[in-house]
Length: 272
Image 1 (tube, rainbow, N blue to C red):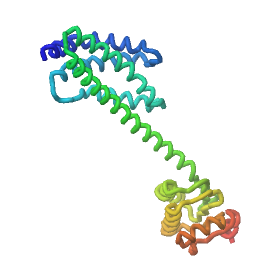
Image 2: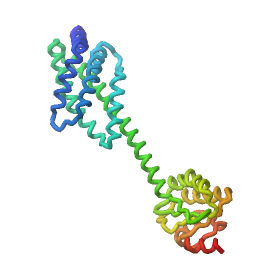
Image 3: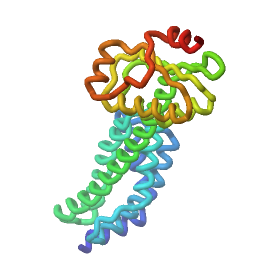
Image 4: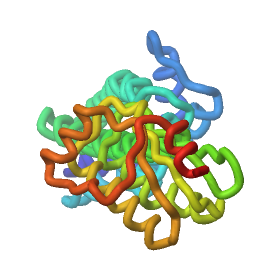
């Protein structure tokens, strides 16, 4: 135990010097890439990390430094925001691990530690480093998920355009595949826009639809019902025979909805 106490004190007293040397050696590893400011930040974090490692060697608890957690989270967030892959971060950890272990092993031997004590110190270090990796990846995935979700919302906005063709009349052309997510977006967002535009006669055109799932069908029927309650006349056009058969087969009654072959036909009927 006396030897571990000596190593713990050495790490605490020389943390900044060791952090500078370790970062310098890591940065010279093959294929290692990092910005200057990232290396400077790494020195600050590793200084605190080494101090904490020294203190943790005297404790039976596997606590982790908050600074290390926050740095790991920031690392993951920055990498995700820059559109880079998490592999860029992960690739930095093997050389980091090797350099740290070399330093810790050398220091342990110089302080006369036994093999068991050297293993203990390296296990404690690896535990802390693995926590850092975990926190980095978790935040990276969270930020990426949020970015993907935002992009999907933007795509949804573009995929359901409302085209006014004259005062009080608009066309809602549906294109591609309609799933429950897209139908829900129409129900929650497009309806409000239609009402704000003071549309009185809405033509929902299905001619560009490739396929539609059962849940989406029910959403579309709900959309029709909500708009009707707002006093908006809704007609549907371009419903192909196979799509109509699918709707009927799924037990949805569209008999109360006016349907026409084309948008032009719906316009001409509305005029008359």
